[in-house]
Image (cartoon, rainbow, N blue to C red; front, side, top):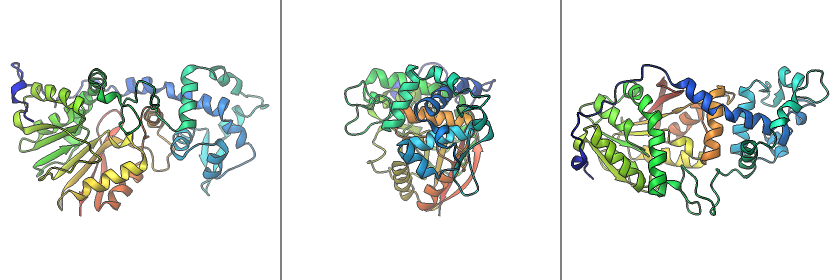
Length: 360
């Protein structure tokens, strides 16, 4: 689908100019609410610290004690470790830190658990507790308005509604506009000819990469209602026929012929491990030898114990999608299983970085 007909009369927008100030602190402040939600859930609803008072407990055993699925347990335990309240002992068992033992065990001289419990009935805390117990995104019930960022049989997706899709796409485009210039510098696309931008959103990442690589063409895959937004923005960036915006289902549709580079920017964190592994494998299989798969995302520590801002972002992802934040080790393992050789992470902005896997 061409976007020539919607080219703007004004000079094309430049996607390569970075912001003069780093907006990371704004995102950290915005996501900070999840620290309250998770800490209060752990103290007032799951009694995490009381359960560990007697000594270290294997992670799987603690998960069973809390009656949590694997994904919610990883989200909760990662955040508590990042807060300095839980730690893994040399055998991998979870135990209380001295900070938690002094302040979150009832009866201790400096106990503050009852102070934390003041937020126990806060609506956002209760919503997080319900998400942790059900392992479902908010809005994921079929009788609700719909989950924002996912689509699946039996779950209504807000991304299939034109007005909701436009609002959510442009909301995410605000972050993307800040990050895209840094991604264009960090992405190793020299020699690549055709990029597939999977779940491209507004298409701003494609715009930046095309402006930075004059010999590159790109195809942006998205859901039908989002493609409408991407087409409009492609016109504003003056990309002509270099960017093709196509309605597609990334889990089903075949990769177009000639693609030698694939971008997954802030995509995999919306999905659980099985879907992530399957998507990476399927996309990698379509690449020629030397082709590149670029994962642009946030990265937890390989030990799943922080950093705290990313652990809190993981909680946001958990509550809105079927995914969470993943570690570099997890991404690298999926790449290696798919026949890719992963490199090092190059930072971009707002805690993101790009990890490139090359087809062997």
